[in-house]
Length: 185
Ligand SMILES: [Zn+2]
Image (cartoon, rainbow, N blue to C red; front, top):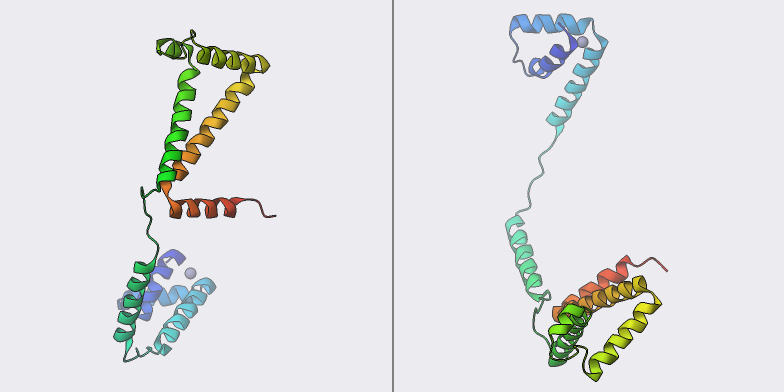
C-alpha cells in the first residue's frame, strides 16, 4: 500500500467503515510509515475536538430579534436618499442647453464644409468673417495646440452638461468620489 491510498482510507478507518482486509492492510502500512502515523494522529485529534464541541443554545427570542433587525433595516432603507434623475431646476436646464449649444455650434463651425451650407457664417457676413479670422489667428499659433484646446474645451463642456443633468445627489456623489481620488495633501 502506498501513502496516497492509505491517507484516503484513514478517515474511513476511524469511522470503522473499512473491511477487515482493508483494515489489516492499512494498519500494516501505518505501523511502518511515520507520515501516515502523523496523519492518523491529526485526524484523531480533529475527531476528538469535534466530539468535544458543545452546541450553542440559541436564545429564546432569536426570531423576534431577527425580525426586529429586518424591520429596522427596511426602515433605514426608506430613509436613504433616492436619486432624483431629471428633476432639474430651470437654471440648471437652461445652463445645460446653453453649454450643449455652444459645444454643437463650435463643432459645426469648425468644419468649413458644414459652414458653407449654413445661411449664416458661410463666409459672406461679418460674423463668419470675424469667426474665420479668429480661427486663422488661432491656427497660425499652433494647429496642434488649437486642436488640443478644442478637445479639452469640448470634454469639459460634456462633463458640465452631464453634471448639470445628473441632479444634486449625483453631483454630490461625483464630487465626493473625485475628492477621495485626489492625492493626499
Ligand atoms: Zn504512508
